[in-house]
Length: 272
Image (tube, rainbow, N blue to C red; front, side, top):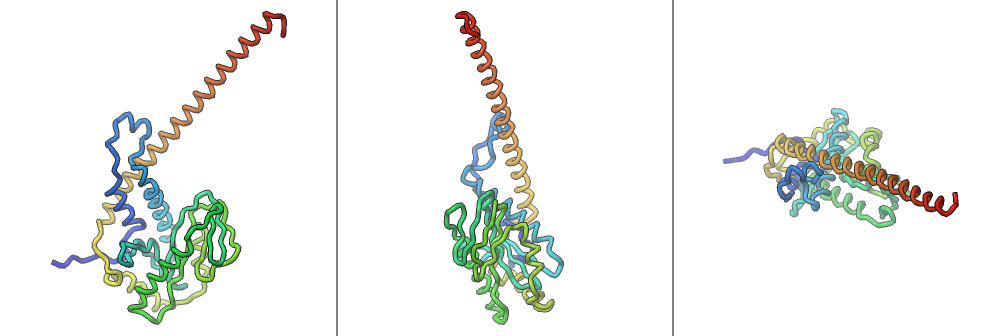
């Protein structure tokens, strides 16, 4: 029996990451008290997966706002080691792989062949170039006439991005500017070419894709987990706030008591 694989455009942002997250989040069943105290439903090792999935979903939602002459794809399988292209867009400006990175609240410095985060080198350029090369290799097997895919690094909520030297191939920018930047680029493909490339990318055979869990089921499960995680984080923050307030009041009472004792002692010896 032949299993029909849905078109690649049906894949969701962070689809595979969410599948893995739901399968491997080994957490003991939480007691009612643990829930009230805000114990997370996530294993500590999977927090980064969860946060990354949320960021990928947000980036996917942003890309979905591109005009109809752009096509957006997510979670495209490439290579032999379960590698994936998280986001790929095809439009009048060409083909772009979007590599999302999360330097939230950190300073990013970009040089010709190097990206530095908070004084530490990070392999952002290498990773982005590798993804674009994989996509180019896959597409050129069928359409060798088209230009290479262009790599883009979308940074999630960096504190500051300083471009000291522009990398020759990779575009590095804050994710909130991604769609506007794409729309400002010069036209590289006519409508017929955009349709041809989009059709190729949309074909599961291009990627050797296998069936995935139903997207609706994936998002329903993640939405339930997301709600639970958010609620546990709110409860922990509330408890911390209450604890801080109690501590401040306690310290204040103790200070008043100490002052009263000292005042009494000084009064007893005729001082004050």
